[in-house]
Every structure is written in C-alpha cells, then in structure tokens.
Length: 344
Image 1 (cartoon, rainbow, N blue to C red):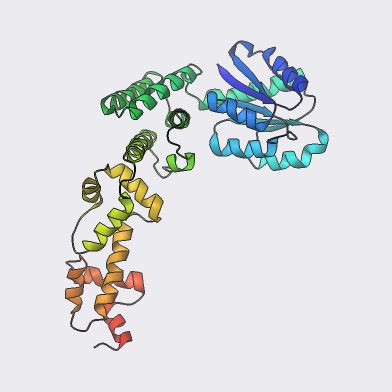
Image 2 (cartoon, rainbow, N blue to C red; image 1 turned 90 degrees about the vertical axis):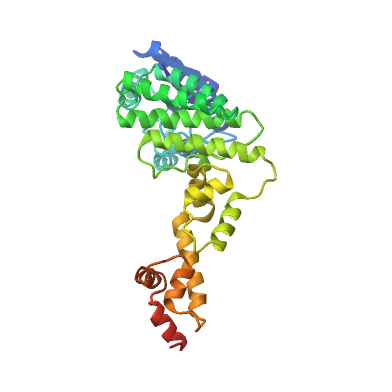
C-alpha cells in the first residue's frame, strides 16, 4: 500500500485530485488522505509514512513552498508533486529546488495523473523493499520505541536481529536497507517524542551521515537515543562532556582513550563519541591532541624544561613524533618556537 497526501486549501480540488488518483490503475494499492494546508499535511505525515505528496503552492498557515522545504529536510524519501495555477510558475520553480519531482497545472487531467503516478510508483518500487514493509516498519518502530523507553536491551538486540533477518528474507539491496532504516528511525523518534515527556530534535538524532553501513548507523542511533533518555532521567546530573574535558585536561600525560573516558563517565563509547563531536565540533582524539600541544607551548616557554621533558609531560613518549605534531599544529618545531622566544 502506497500512502498519498493531497494538499490544497480548496477542498473541492483536493477531493477531485484524490478521486482521480483513486480511479486509476493503482487504486487498490493507494491510501489517500487530504489536507487543507502545509501544517495539516505535516501532521498527517507525522502520523503515517507518506510516499507521495501532491501540494498546491498558495495556502494559508503554511504554503507549498515552506511545505516542500520541510518535507525535503524531514522526509527525504517522500516524492513531491506541485499542482498549481499558471501564475504560480515562479514559485513552482523555487519548489523544484526543494526536490519536487513534477509540476502540474490546475486542473490536472485523469490521464496526466495516471501517467505521473505510474512513474512515481515505479520509483517507489525500485527504492522501497516492498509495499508490505510499510506495515512492518510501523510495527517494528513501535516495538523498538517501547524497548528503548523501558531500557530493555535484550529486546533491542532481538529487534535489530529481526530486521537483519527480514532483510535477508526479502533480499534487500544496501539501498533498500538504507531506506527502510531511515524511515524506521524517523518513526522511532516521533514515537518517542509523542510521549510528551522529552523532546529530541531530528537533526540531533540523525547526525550519523558519515556512517556508510546502514545497520551500523541504526545501532549508533539506538545507542544515542537510549543514552539520551537515561541522561534526561538522571535530571541535574553533571554534564558528561564538561566532565570529559576536565578529565582530559588533568590527564594529558596519560594514554586514556575514548572507551576508558566513556567508562569513567558511565556511558557507552558510541554515545560518548557522537555527543563529544556534536558538542565540541572535534573528535575526542583531535581535542586531546590540541590540548596537549597547547600545554606543550606553555611548557616550552619555561627554560628549565628540556624538549624531551615537555614531550613526556604532554603524553608523547617519542620526542620525534612530538616535534612533527607540534610543527604541524603550530608551523614551527619546538626548537624553532623556542628560538623565536629567545630561549636557547
């Protein structure tokens, strides 16, 4: 079943388009809903996956231009079609910048809609694992949301394994697995937020784009969401990133790695790595290196310290490696830096 939302502030037009779509060759495979503006359309899309969106441009509350922009950000796999008047062509061109697939003039004919629908369904069938997966995604996301909320890690592992087995059974391609996971994660976040207790922004939750393997991306998001919920439940606990920064600053000479610091803080390494990069703009390793080399500059300004002493003091047992890193970061070797300061 493919879900379609038709959005127009003129109810007659919305119902007409919906009726024409329902009379086409895919009638038995379509679930069509109507909305009178962009805000209402987004509400419908939050409740249920939308595969194809038909929208007007000029509407109250939220127009089609803003709607297409929001849909591209929040629901990138949704295929969007603009249906509007001739005078709105300039706005339609702007919509095209937000990933709109087609632009139809009002009123669209049954033949136009059928032709376009055939094209869009073809795209969906190539991208999506199977129409039956729509129900599976919703059910699976609901169960996963409940497992994460109750911190049932055994059930979480079981559900991830179920997804892997489902993909094998239907011979999903990597691209299809990616689509399945993106839609599932979107639903998962909305189900957690719908509880009305905590609210997590989507851009915080999905910031794992650098992870290419879909299942690993899913595991990272589950770990992030689980830890985020537990952090919220702890209330006014100390900020883990500020604690981590303080620990690093006081242990520059040590070889404490990310996993060790995460264990000291009592959170998973995956969540800690994601949160540290998000909050500081640097990876754990780059932050520690920068702090070490900043500390080295201060020590090099003290004549009583030999360069080898400075190297050891900031955690580098190999003075040659330390010198290379120092020059890469400061543009000068430790010796050149001291000469610049007039220290022999």
